[in-house]
Image 1 (spheres, rainbow, N blue to C red):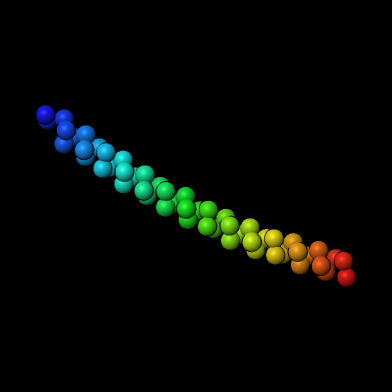
Image 2 (tube, rainbow, N blue to C red; image 1 turned 180 degrees about the vertical axis):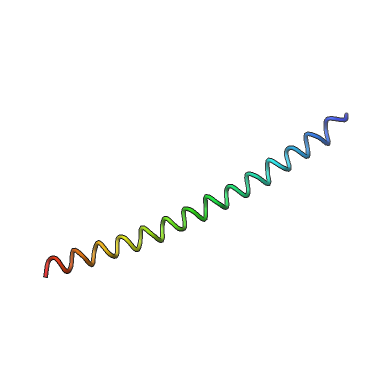
Length: 52
């Protein structure tokens, strides 16, 4: 019976760590998506200036 609180505490710590890492990854994906949009825009501008 003494192991139940210990297991619950470990599960809570794991859940908090998982949520934290999930939000970090989500933030990185958002940054990468924004960077990709900017790079695509710059490539299209370079293509347009090269064709003219």
